[in-house]
Image (cartoon, rainbow, N blue to C red; front, side, top):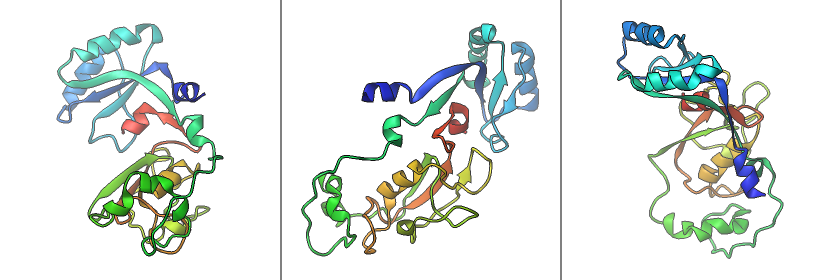
Length: 231
């Protein structure tokens, strides 16, 4: 059921790992004092986390809650919490199998051949909204499994994403600047947001002139840690 699917989207917390987000202006001496007081070793979530001061600590599971309670009292600590394992719901990962009714269309804009099947765009009032705004000047970050936004090694850009401007992509799973999609969910989400529109190919996107920032925080299996996503 949908309820069961949603329940497994957030898996059990890891009893041995906690996340510790420190104040951005914390000093090396402050960090040393925090580690000494709590009896923990703080390690940056990854090499991009220095600016945000986001750390992970491996702890004795039986002492985890007491350590978190101690850290929460420290004014240099913004957040202390167990790290969790997150995964896309099977409902998100399964292909759509139900044919939706076709929308009535008006001649002209957009000319994408599958727009007539995008009944949801009419439901949210896009034909009227497009007359007033098209997303120009907005950057939308897509935190997901990545995006098929470039031709790189074995990855290929999806044809109907050509013409979109992609800015500052980053892969937080592999710590690279290539946030390519090895799952497909992030690409689908990106298409919903900004698929190239009025280009005579495929479907239309909601905000056709936004810029997309592809951020890969979930692996090819559709999962990742809260620490990685937060980073």
